[in-house]
Amino acid sequence: MLTFEKALPEETGIPVDCIGHFIERLNRRHIPMHSLLIMHNDKLIFEGYYEPCRADSLHRMFSISKSFTSIAIGLLVDEGKISLDDPIIKYFPEKLPPKVHPWIASMTIRNMLMMRTCHASTTYKLNMNSDWVESFFTTPPTHPAGTIFHYDTSAAHTLCALVEKLTGEDMLDYIKKKLGILGLSENSYMLKDPFGVSIGGSGLVALPMDLMKFGYFIAHKGMVDGKQLISSSYIDMAVSCLTETQITAPVPSEAQGYGLQFWRGEKNGYTCYGMGGQLIIFLPDYDLICVTTADTQNIGGGNQQIYDALYEELLPYIQDKPLPVTKDSSKLLEDILSSLKIEALNSFPMPASAAAIIGKDFRVITENSQFDSFCLNIDQLGQYDISPQSGTLSFVHKNTACTVNFGIGCMKTGIFPIYDLKYCASGAWLADGTFYIKVHIIDSYVGSLHFQLSFGKDDLTIFMRKKEESLFKEFEGHLYCKS
Image 1: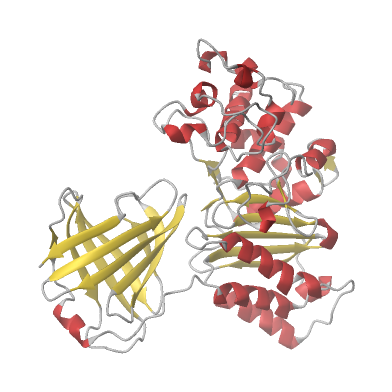
Image 2 (image 1 turned 60 degrees about the vertical axis):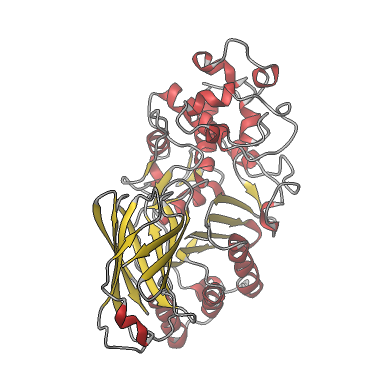
C-alpha cells in the first residue's frame, strides 16, 4: 500500500507561515473548507481537516469522479479491450433507438473523454427517472461530435457504464484491483443511478487521502513503487490541452483547456475538479500537489478563491533549498492544524423579545406544505450575550417529528432528519432581529441548508433555501405560521 514520507514544510523549502496565510485568506472570505493536503517534492508537508471533518470522514468528490473514469478507460485501452476511436454505439446496441442520429453514430470514446460530444448538456437530467445511459443515445443532438467543448456529465456516466459492462465489476472496484498498490480506502464507493450503474460523472465518495494517492499516481505518470500501472502516454495525453474551454468556462482556472476528463489550469498546471471545491491541483513546475475538499456551492467564484489563495499566498514563497526549522515554526504548524474548523455564524446578542417566542409552537398555514409546525428552542434563555449556546429547530414533516441541533457561536453535529446524512450547524441572531440557521451537509451528499425565521407577535415567517444538487427540495421557499 502506498504511504507517503512526511516532512515539515520548511524541510522542502516552504515557510509554514505561508500555509497559515493561505488558510487565513480563505477564512476571511468565509470559504467553507473541509480538508487541505499539500505534497511538495513527493513529501506530505500538510494534512489538515476542518472539525468536525476528520481523516476518516468519507466525502462526496463530485466531478473528480470523471478523472477516475478516464483512468478506467485508459486501463481498458491498455488491456486491448477498447480503442479511443471506437464509436460508442458499438458497445450499447440495446440502448439505441430504432433510428440512430448520424452525429450520435459517429461519436467516439475520445470525443466523450474530451467533452466534445454532440450534446450541449447532461442528457439524463432531462428526465432523472429514465434510463440515464439510454438517454445519451436517444436525446436529440445539438451539433456534430468532435467539434465544440460542452460540459456533458452524461458522457462520463456512459463511459463508466462501458467499464462496468466490459469488466463485470463496479468501476471503482475495477480501479482498486488494477491500482491495488495505491491502497485506496476500502470504504470508498460510488453512488449509483436508479438503474444500478455507478455515477461515473459525480458519484465518488472517498477520503481526501484517496485523492492525494490518486494525485501522486497521476503526477508520476502511472509509475508507483517501480511499477507502471498504466501507460504513461495515456496520462500525458489525459492531462494535456486537447480542447479549448475559454468560451464556456465560469472562472479563469477553468478557461485554460481540457484533456481527457482533466482540466488544464493556470501556472502550467492541471486539475481534477469537483463541484464545491473538491480539487486535486497539480503544479509540476513547483513539484506540488494540493488537495482540497470544501463546499463552495453557496459562494460565487468560490473555487477560484481557493486557486488564487494557493497561487498568491504560497507559490511565490517556495524556496529551492530547505529552510531552518525552529521551535516557533513547529509551534505555528501545530497551532494552524489545531485551529481548523468549519466556521460558525457570527451572532448579534439575543433580543429581549426572544423570550416570548422561544419554545412556542407555530402551526404552518401555507397551503400544500409538507410541514405541519415549527418550534425554535435555545438553551440558557436568560442569557442575552453571544457566549456559546445551543438550540434546536424542531418541525413536523409529513406527520414525522424532526429536530436539527445547532450551536450559537459554535457548531453542533448530528444526523439530518429525512435524509439521514451527517451535518453540522450553527445559528445566529441577525441585526434585524431575525434568526438564521445554516446547516452544512458533510456526507455522501455535500451542500448547505439555510433557514431564516422572522417572528411577529403571534406569527412566524420562514424562508428556506438549499444549496445542494439533487436533494432537500422541500427546504425551498417561504412558509407562514401562526401560534
